[in-house]
Image 1 (tube, rainbow, N blue to C red):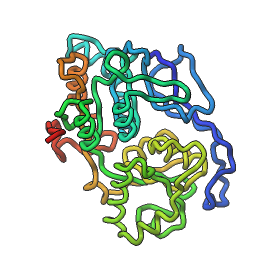
Image 2: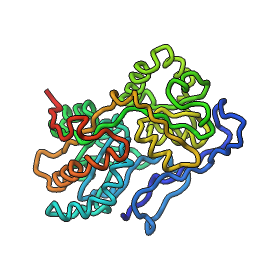
Image 3: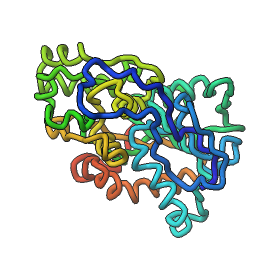
Length: 338
């Protein structure tokens, strides 16, 4: 895959840890090397204080054969699927080969995806990426039912979407220095450890977490738990799949509330520092993810990608911690507008 790596590493100043940092022999990172996908060895790489740069992978000049805008929380599954499997699968099953370096993937919170497409632009520092049919525009948008419904009302996506995955609700991501202190939501609620979770601006994810906490530990315990929330810190983006591991690795917070599949991914990416704890009681609060095409006209690339996702998701997503296809309406087609 040939592209400029815009979001590889994070730089922070040490000494900004929470008051519950502890007295153990733990040394917090001052440099966090972000998990990377694809081969960018021959590309210019911008390293340094790059955490402000949005999650964009692929060509930004309008030359992409396929452009996918998606909610970012399933990127650990989707991005490797595209980089490792899409080219060979499309060569065999479609009339065209969708090579990874011809695909643009934008992985951001759903509220940001809706805002960007409604306003038809993304601002990256002093640069502006115009979003229009004659420049850069998604062929496919992936996300929850409500955000896609909002885009359908704006005429940005087709009024029909198809279910391809369902997550299993929240999990816990903890720094290993607290491994002896918590092993569940209940022990977390009884502790004095600080927590980090999606911001109020990420209303969809945050409301799911609060609903889950109320059901499992009760409203009073949830309120006490969130009094220990670390709501702001240097470098916070309002993108939970970046903010939560960042906060733990740099000592800004002790425990992260995040979707269980993300907790598993980051504990694997940083095994010496982070540990994932499953919350089986959260499974009923999982939500479906849907795929919607944007063009009313037939799009060979979008059709091929939809077939690819529906063909691969049944195996790839459950192996990453998502719900098995037999436990939700896999491939169900829904109407996004009345």
